[in-house]
Length: 208
View 1 (cartoon, helix red, strand yellow):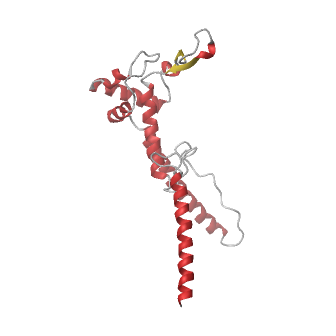
View 2 (cartoon, helix red, strand yellow):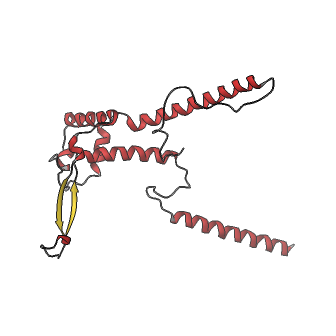
View 3 (cartoon, rainbow, N blue to C red):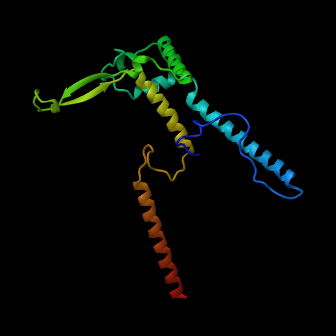
């Protein structure tokens, strides 16, 4: 199933807008009913699968998801506009973690985020061994809210899980612990095997 512009982004209950092609003859009404029944059934099954994927992506955030997301966040990162450090989030108690999980769940289900998540703290960092009086000696960095980072990681983990489940094994690009070198190796092995089969077949004919 195509994940780009994925099915979980396009959904909607209701009658299928498809209509059968016009037919002529005495049995056209019967064929029309069969066609409509078949298409309606397939549409309902497809729509049901979309809802399942929606639940996988937009379901409630759990405390375990927050802990998993924070594990991949460096504690040494600086604070953003919310003045919260990653180390603070990693030491949250159960009650605070449950509150954060509920807040992230509300953000996913309602599609509304805190204003501070849309802000960034801008800093100009001096490049090594560059003069301080030259604007080109500085590179800008933007510090985002640390509470937004686990939210991004949770969404990424959910999308990655669906992507891995629905993507064929032949797809190696944009996948974790896989790369296109594997495909080059597979093609090379296939070509070598075909040459070997052709050579053995030729030798077998010569022997006989």
